[in-house]
Image (cartoon, rainbow, N blue to C red):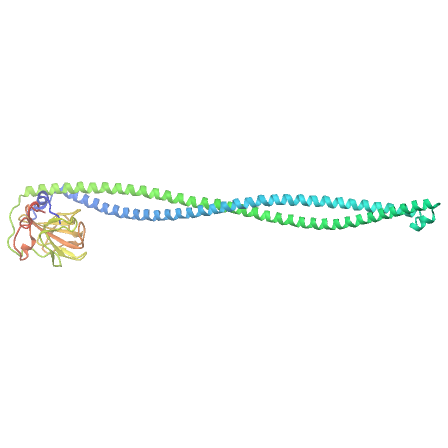
Length: 429
């Protein structure tokens, strides 16, 4: 427990004499009740703030996961778009190849049509030649010679016959060639048509894949973007709620400090009115307030929090969390309050200017104005305030001066000030 200012000691030296004077009147009692309610609200607000902080941490983790999903989706979208560009390029390539193939099919068809016409013309020509030969009764070269009227006529007739035969042979050869060309052109046409059909099917597959890739990319990006936006909005709401809760907590803490100040002022006024003096006599007039032994005495020590030299104004008694803490003597409860250093502290006035302090309690079993008997339960040990673990910090004060509690348990009767030296101020509660 830290060294307290003299005014605070006066506050609780004695608010009553032998239980006949009320601690601070009706208004102080109302302030105590209000402070208890405010402190309870502070506890609830702190719990709410812890819940909000946990929710905020959870939302932050969810947002981080969503952002990671968005990054993954965006990467997949980039892959999809790359594949889409390739598919579109392939589609254009196939369209060009299909156009060329269709043109080749058209040319092949026109060649076939021309060959068919050529063959028809050859057939017709050959037919005409055969008909003319039949009508003239031509029996070949011998017949031509026999029908000649003179040797010169014979020569002329032979030349004409051979020429006719050559023409027929040429027509037949042309017809044969045309038939061969027709077969080759039809084979080429069939191959081109099969190629065109294959290209059409391939193009349909590419178009279908392109559409599927586009749809998947857009859907993935839209869904993950919506998720990220929702998580971000949730984060904003929780942050706003946390700020509001912190504001409410700060207001409640300010109200608690104001009430504590009012209670202290009222108690100090009561102490001044009482003007109690005196000093309890003899060792053994107090009962040991907790079940454990002495863990730390009065005097100078290294402060476990600041690391500097300080004055320890009371004794530390071993106690487990929740162990009973009992009144060292009969008296009246002056205050059950809280401060940052001592945590929950109960103060009992015993008359003759003596008060005893019970600090770092986890909870109270008494309330201000209540009369307690020696050994009666005051509260439960704990580690509230600045404490390294559960224990009881026990002080004894007479008027404005803190005394070594061990003087009532077999030790020398001495003030705390006699054990703490300058530059430390006169130690008080």
